[in-house]
Length: 391
Image (cartoon, rainbow, N blue to C red; front, side, top):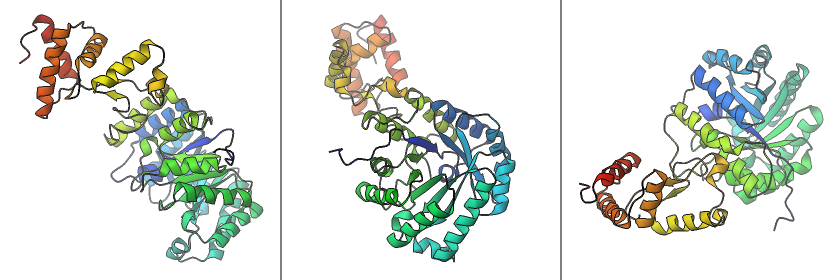
């Protein structure tokens, strides 16, 4: 099944949590302290490049914070998004940036909305890429709305930039989230034939397919995936850093250099800045990603764990991503689950005590008053002194 894959040996992660696409999430504003903290955390987790924001006359208040991030001395490449104008490129140079992201549309609909022509697009792209390269910057150039572009023009676009510039990374964007994994894989396969420049992919999540599309692109040979922590971003968000890094390692055997055990911590740092946003069901980093309630699942977990076979019952263990198992006392819990969690908290219950707790928790849950972890601990403390009164 994988014989026709063109998997690279290593995939780089370019994170855009702090860039426009991350901060374009409605209601999102990063303070200077948050921007610095998140940049440090991204560097610690091992991303290859951090896009730290927009250098634009529209957001002058961000310039100081962006410059401070650039001066942190991070191991990751630090780049910034700039307008297709020489003054903003000059500002990136003055701000000690190592690289810039610039972009122009590739679909006719977007080109016409800018009141430009295909020729204008190519001329401006060549001029600005050349200017940035001549001033010592690494350049990532994005072809916006590439999944709706005319095939012939897209091929000309890619080949022209390949021949006429010293572009470092060519980014193919599914800006309107209209690609299927199969279609996006086909598109990246074509682009690989048109250029030898490293290819990055940028996917939006309006159909819940951003990560799937990014993974499909990697199987066609894409070298770089742009991500945001927790998948935040414009509209429905972008490709999730944590989902992509774990899937590439576990399902595809591809190294990203990401320290997976730090993903949960990174997720929480970003969530503090965005306010609680991600679902508790979120894969990899969600509170319930490794949650248990039904007694048979708890018993299976205990049996597998005791036999050293826990991996057989999981896609991967929570320690891999810095997460952990969680117990939810609810309607479906039984004696084994109660005793397991009580033991973990330092209480040794008899079967009778566990049964009494089961009855009480079921009663509360049916009334939509499911105990939280603090309630459960208080119940354990109470039953330690009496086995007959939990009211």
